[in-house]
Image 1 (cartoon, rainbow, N blue to C red):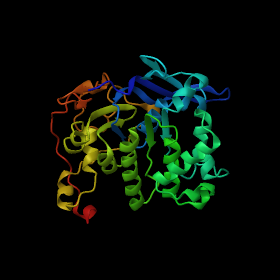
Image 2 (cartoon, rainbow, N blue to C red; image 1 turned 90 degrees about the horizontal axis):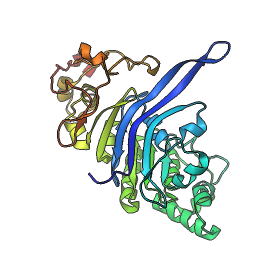
Image 3 (cartoon, rainbow, N blue to C red; image 1 turned 45 degrees about the vertical axis):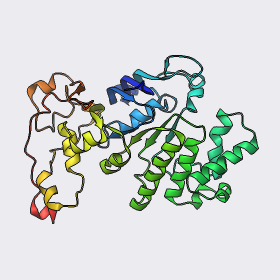
Image 4 (tube, helix red, strand yellow; image 1 turned 90 degrees about the vertical axis):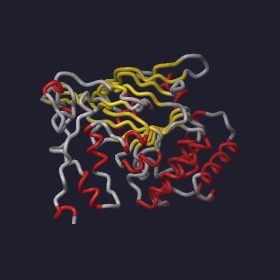
Length: 349
């Protein structure tokens, strides 16, 4: 592959838990536990997994939003990004606010909730213009022209610029969020479940819009979601996370059509299919819930629910291993088959 835009190396994110009368630290939530991942230029990398798997935390760590907003968060590892105004790369992890400011224009984020991510006291023009005020030397007239162009490009009328967020639907608000993220011509956009709060019909519109804007602006996306059908539609590659670790990485076709990690196979089997008989035969039903990050199992975090688990799985976290054609899997027993559990007739009716 070509030189990646972002190199994530052994990234760890821990949130301290305090208790007792003296409010001392009694535990730590390991939300991201040693992730190594590359984001290639111009690609859409889908990041999927159950709630609590660390997807959003990973995205926020890449954009360096955790340390300024979360007290005493513990960050480890490296997040390497091309150095602005020079050769080589810089580690974004741990940069202070002043040092990080130039890179804010290059890395933007589309937030999950279009209702809480927009300031209700600001007009749409002020919201989209905000990044331009901070990161550019454009005149007020040039900024206004840029705002109106962006609004039109995301499917909103230019006259909407003087309105406030409460006057728009959820889909329209998310379009405003997309316009704001594109204002500074970023290289990388972190999309944190951008369609999960929208109706299904609106989801398709926003996904298609993001795909069009990727081609037009030459963007690179990290698309965080839990809906595998949506991720498969928009992604070039998919990384599957479980309890803070990446367990499988491959092209969208590899992960969706030939899943190799037991957890990925279970996720794929739960995707609704047009033929109910096919769904009933292939359904894999995992036992129990995802463990809490406060008491993460030793070794492989999935071993407590895995049908292929062995005693050796408790000894060490399995690394990602290339199983062919760049398809990486963190399971030494991925070649072994296990019998899916059929869905009872009553449950499938």
